[in-house]
Length: 476
Image (cartoon, rainbow, N blue to C red; front, side, top):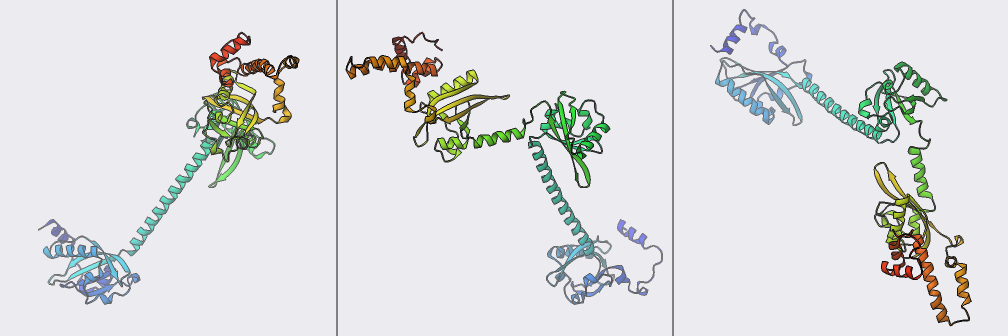
């Protein structure tokens, strides 16, 4: 006797009532009972009155049982039926079959299969799985909704972290009841002399000198509730820096939090984002042209006044171009200004001419500053002013560079020689004045002066020797 057979016999030990003497046994034992004949047709069916969702299935009688099964369930039913017929002693495991009826109605039933001894009929006792399936469907829907909420929460948390970290304002999020730092950005951690990861989750009072947790939190609550007290002055423990902590209460998800803004007390009032915003407004609205370049003179940024002066339609027309392209003497002017600014830090009132993109020229006065920061060389800043005739830079005013003595000497020659001889005699005076001016503008840089005058270096030395200017200054 097989193990399953012995188990079945042991379960049937003792006296059981005759099934025929128990009324409605089949209806009460299962939600649905189906008697399948030897040919696979439904010969009888019973539905438990406590399962109204199944409805009336009397139309199944006389039709093939597999007609009301899905394709997958038909294969499963055939396999279990074959096992049952091949071994009468076997007790098949329960199986779940999906029924289809009226083309659109589908419902799952969990069946146990029983052989009718002395007959080829098979009795199927089924339990309606629709309530369980509905519960499972609700669980799946809830799980999907939960995953969507978690994904949305992660996205919002990411946005929060990015905005907090990108903010230039030093901010600390504090849990007032525990006195603990919930979040802190790098700007605030830098003022306190450490990193954000070190302070997150720690006690706020531990970051400052001489303050207990209860005392500090009470002071912050008082400051937050007061219209007069703007902040609590503290000393950072790690770097000894004086700071002011300005608190603000807010409530989120029923919990009370405190957002604190750190303000350094050892800096000027306008030293943060407010000052940067003010400078940006000045950069955009000033009437003087302002140009920012890299160390080679390539334009990084320029304001609207420079675009008007250069007749450029928009910033991208001049960005990544060399500033020397807009100067009358080109690279000579640019090199001279940048070298002087690099040596002395700045250069003021450099007179030259500027050429626009359409070829028009204007006389300008340029101031240059060499820009540096902690990371190294940033480039140069140019302030370019269009010099008006009222400021004495027109052609008539340019003649004033000739000294009164030189003009008197020239005038004394009138009447003593022909015009050709006069011009020949005065050309040396003008040439000497031009060379002196070029040498003065370039800071006695003979190479730059030669380039400015369009001469070779050897020719410049000849003319310097000719006019007695060779020893007027030291060569670079």
